[in-house]
Structures are given as structure tokens and as C-alpha cells.
Length: 282
Image (cartoon, rainbow, N blue to C red; front, side, top):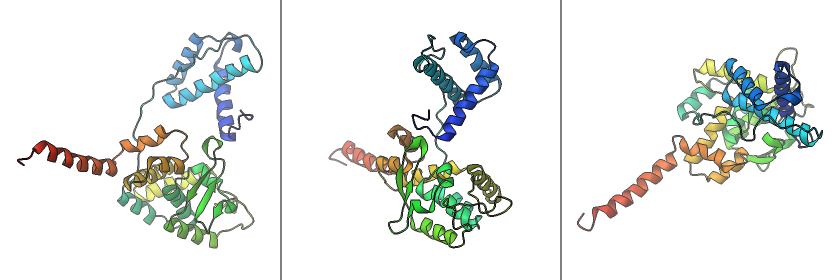
């Protein structure tokens, strides 16, 4: 996985999945059959794990047996059949309405927190990308941010809106620990002036969610940006590039949400259809 340049979080997740599987097993690894894998799936379902989480376990185990066969040259058959996974629901991405965005940010008085969440709302940064963001990744003159080592190890460039620029400047001016490369730091307690963690950022959004009465997560801010851009007639490919999606199908999910662009296109086209169907006597 390291040779494939997988992130540290991905490696930890795979190792954790494999550890859980091995501890559950009551027979040698090389004797595991497909039937045993289905029993393990039943075990995970009994623990009420989500189908998506169970699929992650199956991917880890499948990859491990591929490694044993290809790299270690063990003559074993992979017990996880290729393409085997639990069927997943396809819920629509949840986004905030304009009044909810206003209500949430009216509750955020901290300059640091305002800057963090503006980066998610206006630039589409993931929570992990905000946590590792460094000062030198910001091009203040050109109003853009270089996002290094995003999901899947991909780099990309995003752009800074006027309100995000204002929030970032306000925070940087009063920021502690000027020698620390990462921009967002803990402001209180024993870890003061150290980089804030992804868990710490999520705790902050939970706090503001309760304070404002707006049910929101960090990832919903990213969804909100995508939906707002789509409704403002931004091209789907542009949104894909800004969000760092590998596949356009991932970005197309936002087209299924309340889409003002689709609404406008529908009524415009329907007006043409109705004029044509009315005939010359209309």
C-alpha cells in the first residue's frame, strides 16, 4: 500500500480491518473459504455495521489475499470473490439552504473557526485537507490554494472567494505559533499552538450545530458549495475539478438534488414545447 502511495489513514484503516478479521478467525488464514467470508459478513451485520463499512472490510481482505498470492507467491484462492459487496443505498447529498448557512455562521465568533469552515463552504476543502493546510500553500496574490495530498493522494488548486479571503486574513493576523507551518492551531489547553486535528475540527462543527440549531457536518458544507455552484450555472467539469473528484459520476450526484439549473432549463424548454404543440392557431 505504501508503494501505491496510499495515505497513512488508508493504511491504518486497512490494518485495523485485517486485525479484526484475523482475531475473529478460528482457522488458518490459508484455509479460509468463501463460505467463511459470508459468515464473517453475517458477524459484521450482527454488530450493526453499515453496509459501506462492511464493504471496506471486504476490500481490505480481498487486497490482503491478492498480496499473499501475488507478492508472497502462496498457492491460495482469494476467498473474497471479485466484485462481491453489499448493495448500498444512494442517498442524495445533503446541503444547507441559504438561511441555514446564515444561521450557522452567525453563531461562529471565533476567527479561526470561521476561516476553517469558510474553506469548506467556499473552496470545497475536506476536513482532513483543512487540518493539514499550511501557510505556504496559500497564494495570497492570486487568491488560490494548493491542496496537496488530497483524497487518493491527488493534488489540486482551489480558489479563494472574497469572504473567505477576509476570514483567512483576519485569522492569520491574530494567529498564535507563527513558526508552525500548519495554519490552523489549537487555541486553548495543554495542546495550545499545536496543529488542530480532524477530530478537533469536527468537534467544533458539532458545537456550532448545537449552538445555531442547524443540523450540519463538515462534509455538508462541501456539498453545499457544490450545489450552490451548480445552481449558479457552473459547469459540472469545473465543479469536479474543484472538489477533486476522480469520476464525473461522483459529481453528477449533485444534479439529483434540488437543482435550480435543471428547473430553469425545464421551464425554458417546456415553454418551447408548448408553443410548438399549440399550433399556428394559438
